[in-house]
Length: 128
Image (cartoon, rainbow, N blue to C red; front, side, top):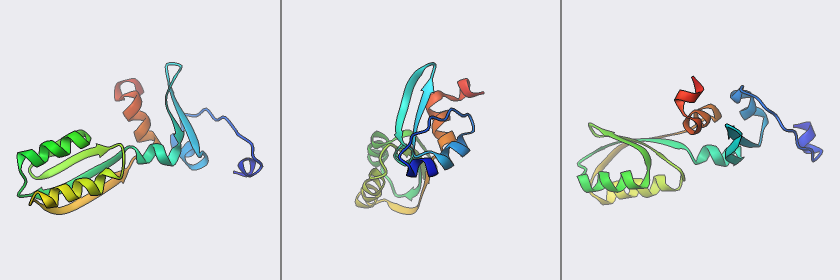
Protein backbone atom coordinates (compact mmCIF):
# COMPACT_ATOMS: atom_id res chain seq x y z
CA UNK A 1 0.00 0.00 0.00
CA UNK A 2 2.92 2.32 0.74
CA UNK A 3 4.38 1.65 -2.71
CA UNK A 4 1.02 2.50 -4.26
CA UNK A 5 1.05 5.89 -2.56
CA UNK A 6 4.45 6.43 -4.22
CA UNK A 7 2.93 5.71 -7.62
CA UNK A 8 4.62 2.33 -8.00
CA UNK A 9 3.17 -0.88 -9.39
CA UNK A 10 4.01 -4.31 -8.01
CA UNK A 11 3.32 -7.55 -9.87
CA UNK A 12 2.34 -10.29 -7.44
CA UNK A 13 1.94 -13.94 -8.37
CA UNK A 14 0.14 -15.97 -5.72
CA UNK A 15 -2.28 -18.80 -5.13
CA UNK A 16 -3.23 -17.27 -1.75
CA UNK A 17 -6.18 -15.43 -3.22
CA UNK A 18 -7.56 -14.17 0.10
CA UNK A 19 -4.27 -12.32 0.63
CA UNK A 20 -4.28 -11.01 -2.95
CA UNK A 21 -7.79 -9.69 -2.31
CA UNK A 22 -6.56 -7.75 0.76
CA UNK A 23 -3.56 -6.20 -0.99
CA UNK A 24 -4.38 -5.65 -4.67
CA UNK A 25 -6.57 -3.07 -6.39
CA UNK A 26 -6.30 -4.63 -9.84
CA UNK A 27 -5.92 -8.28 -10.78
CA UNK A 28 -5.46 -10.50 -13.80
CA UNK A 29 -6.45 -14.15 -13.82
CA UNK A 30 -4.28 -16.27 -16.09
CA UNK A 31 -5.16 -19.76 -17.31
CA UNK A 32 -2.67 -21.75 -19.42
CA UNK A 33 -0.71 -18.58 -20.20
CA UNK A 34 -3.76 -16.55 -21.30
CA UNK A 35 -5.35 -13.68 -19.39
CA UNK A 36 -9.01 -14.64 -18.99
CA UNK A 37 -10.07 -11.77 -16.71
CA UNK A 38 -8.48 -8.53 -15.67
CA UNK A 39 -9.42 -5.23 -14.14
CA UNK A 40 -10.21 -3.52 -10.90
CA UNK A 41 -10.84 -6.15 -8.26
CA UNK A 42 -13.97 -4.43 -6.96
CA UNK A 43 -15.51 -4.31 -10.44
CA UNK A 44 -14.66 -7.94 -11.25
CA UNK A 45 -16.28 -9.11 -8.02
CA UNK A 46 -19.41 -6.98 -8.60
CA UNK A 47 -19.80 -8.62 -12.01
CA UNK A 48 -20.27 -12.00 -10.35
CA UNK A 49 -22.97 -11.43 -7.75
CA UNK A 50 -25.03 -14.38 -6.56
CA UNK A 51 -28.73 -13.64 -5.93
CA UNK A 52 -31.37 -15.67 -4.12
CA UNK A 53 -35.06 -14.74 -4.16
CA UNK A 54 -38.01 -16.41 -2.52
CA UNK A 55 -41.20 -15.80 -4.50
CA UNK A 56 -44.75 -17.07 -4.78
CA UNK A 57 -47.65 -16.55 -7.18
CA UNK A 58 -45.22 -16.52 -10.12
CA UNK A 59 -45.86 -17.47 -13.73
CA UNK A 60 -43.70 -19.58 -16.01
CA UNK A 61 -43.35 -16.49 -18.22
CA UNK A 62 -41.81 -14.52 -15.32
CA UNK A 63 -39.37 -17.33 -14.54
CA UNK A 64 -38.34 -17.46 -18.22
CA UNK A 65 -37.72 -13.68 -18.30
CA UNK A 66 -35.53 -13.83 -15.19
CA UNK A 67 -33.54 -16.77 -16.55
CA UNK A 68 -32.73 -14.74 -19.69
CA UNK A 69 -31.33 -11.85 -17.59
CA UNK A 70 -29.10 -14.05 -15.47
CA UNK A 71 -26.72 -16.96 -15.60
CA UNK A 72 -26.38 -20.18 -13.62
CA UNK A 73 -30.13 -19.93 -13.10
CA UNK A 74 -31.85 -22.45 -10.84
CA UNK A 75 -35.46 -22.54 -9.70
CA UNK A 76 -36.92 -24.93 -7.17
CA UNK A 77 -40.04 -24.69 -5.00
CA UNK A 78 -40.37 -20.92 -5.09
CA UNK A 79 -36.66 -20.24 -4.62
CA UNK A 80 -34.73 -18.57 -7.43
CA UNK A 81 -30.95 -18.78 -7.41
CA UNK A 82 -28.84 -17.10 -10.09
CA UNK A 83 -25.85 -14.91 -10.84
CA UNK A 84 -25.83 -11.54 -12.54
CA UNK A 85 -22.93 -9.91 -14.35
CA UNK A 86 -24.22 -6.44 -13.50
CA UNK A 87 -25.57 -5.63 -10.03
CA UNK A 88 -27.86 -3.05 -11.66
CA UNK A 89 -29.98 -5.94 -12.95
CA UNK A 90 -31.02 -6.89 -9.39
CA UNK A 91 -33.56 -4.07 -8.84
CA UNK A 92 -34.80 -4.55 -12.42
CA UNK A 93 -35.49 -8.22 -11.72
CA UNK A 94 -37.14 -7.45 -8.37
CA UNK A 95 -39.39 -4.91 -10.11
CA UNK A 96 -40.28 -7.49 -12.77
CA UNK A 97 -41.37 -9.92 -10.04
CA UNK A 98 -43.63 -7.35 -8.38
CA UNK A 99 -45.07 -5.99 -11.64
CA UNK A 100 -45.92 -9.55 -12.72
CA UNK A 101 -48.12 -9.86 -9.64
CA UNK A 102 -45.82 -12.32 -7.88
CA UNK A 103 -44.91 -11.92 -4.22
CA UNK A 104 -41.28 -11.32 -3.30
CA UNK A 105 -40.63 -12.52 0.25
CA UNK A 106 -36.86 -12.44 0.38
CA UNK A 107 -33.93 -11.17 -1.69
CA UNK A 108 -30.33 -11.91 -0.73
CA UNK A 109 -27.17 -10.99 -2.60
CA UNK A 110 -23.66 -12.24 -2.10
CA UNK A 111 -20.66 -10.80 -3.89
CA UNK A 112 -18.09 -13.43 -4.81
CA UNK A 113 -14.64 -13.58 -3.26
CA UNK A 114 -11.62 -13.62 -5.54
CA UNK A 115 -11.30 -17.36 -4.89
CA UNK A 116 -14.95 -17.91 -5.92
CA UNK A 117 -14.35 -15.89 -9.07
CA UNK A 118 -11.18 -17.82 -9.86
CA UNK A 119 -12.91 -21.20 -9.46
CA UNK A 120 -15.86 -20.01 -11.53
CA UNK A 121 -13.62 -18.81 -14.37
CA UNK A 122 -11.03 -21.59 -14.37
CA UNK A 123 -13.43 -24.41 -13.62
CA UNK A 124 -13.67 -26.67 -10.62
CA UNK A 125 -12.02 -29.60 -12.40
CA UNK A 126 -8.81 -27.70 -13.11
CA UNK A 127 -8.54 -26.35 -9.55
CA UNK A 128 -8.81 -29.70 -7.74
